Amino acid sequence: MSEQTSVILVTGGAKGIGRALVDGFVRRGWRVAFGDLDRQAGTALARTLGERAHFIPADVAVEDDVRHLVAEAVRWGGRLDAVINNAGLANPVTGPIENLSLADWQRRLDVNLTGTFLVTREAVPHLRLSHGAVINLASTRALQSEPDTEAYAATKGGVVALTHALSVSLGPEIRVNSISPGWIDTRAWQGSGRDVRETVPPLSEGDHHQHPAGRVGEPEDIVALAAFLVSAEAGFITGQNLVSDGGMTRKMIYEE
Image 1 (cartoon, rainbow, N blue to C red):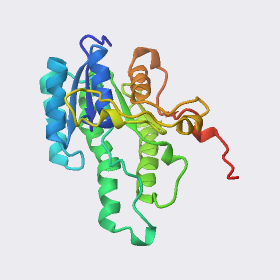
Image 2: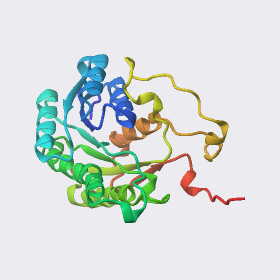
Image 3: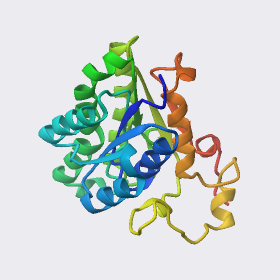
């Protein structure tokens, strides 16, 4: 596909990794429609990036919102070549399992997992026309856990499984992969100022040295991987969960 005319939809695009994805794909020449619940941050980002970015307020857990999100993205862009399901409730800690309410559990399922399903379902007819691609944002927490993170881990494990199921059902017209980020420093991408990226204090050397790659991840690491996965060069890759974590999930950790 030609990046000069391609249209991509990014959910959760106003802050964090999503914000970097919107910025990164615009800089690569794509037209980027993006959804988010944060109207102020989304509107400001679209204004900053100009005519190649289009903000659409949406809650991916609400079916009518998703229908409007995809329809408006296609109306604005004239086509749809790729979808990145990035929207999610990012805080993984929900406290002891015996205190986890059904409402809190369900909200994470609704946003992180059901939202991915709803957006993909609505986008499929358009992606079939373009032989497009879907990327779902999972997490290394689908593979390993800290205490008191059951709801988040379950949703991200579900995203990985949904990804390989979709790849089998939708191929060969549509490729579907997931990315599992590890520790990604998103502090500069929270949309609280006028700039796309803001200045933040540096992390400690100890933070960086925990990673075999020698540093904490940056949102641009995820942008680069996503850009590859939607490109023709990744045409033989589908149904995969690609881990981008600086090697942390491969490192044995012993407490002294």
